[in-house]
Image 1: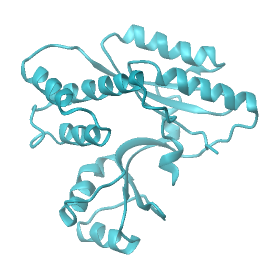
Image 2: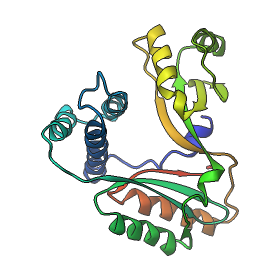
Image 3: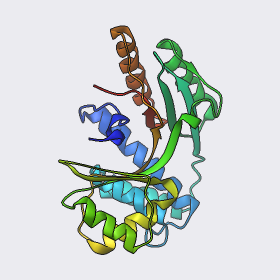
Length: 240
C-alpha cells in the first residue's frame, strides 16, 4: 500500500527474541525522549508520540512506566542517536537509525553487516540526499475530499496524497507531523491510524535484477534487524 510500505522493515514472527528486541527498542526511545524533554507526555510531544507507537506494538505498560521513571530518577544511560548510510546490492541505498551507548561498537557492527553482504558503509551525506524526511499518515474510513477539507481548514500542506483499500495516505514534510496529527485527532479523537510516523522515503526506487542481489538484500536486512542498537532501517528497494 503506497511508497511508505516499500521501505518497511522485513516482517518477522513475534518470537520471544523479537519481542525482547522490540521492548528494548521502545524502552530506549521512551527513556531518551523523557530525558531530552520533560518526562510528562502531556507536555512532551515526542514522548507522547513514542508512547502511542509503543502501545500499538503492544509494549507492556510496565516497560513504558519503568523507562519514564528511570528518566525522572536521574539515572544516566548515555544513549546517543546515530545515523549510518550505506550501499547494498545493485543500486540499493540504506539509512540505518540507531540508539547506542557505544558508538564504536555500533558502527563496527553495522559496517560488518554491509561488508558481509557485498556492500559498504558510506560517509555522512552519501545516501541521505536521495531520501526525503517525511511525515506519513494512513487514515482509514475517510475519503480524500474529507481529509483535504481538514488540511485546508487548518492551513496545512502535504507533498502527496494516495488512496487505496486501506484508506488515505498523506505525505508531508517531517516538520508538519505534530500539526497534521493534531488536526486529524481534533476531528476524530477515536481515529485509529495504522501508520503515523516520521520516516525516510526514497526519492527514486530501484529494483534488484538478479536473485543473488535479492538474497544479499534479504540477508543484509536480517543482519541489521538483529542488531540491538538498530532502531529503524530504510532503503530504496522496490519490493515485489
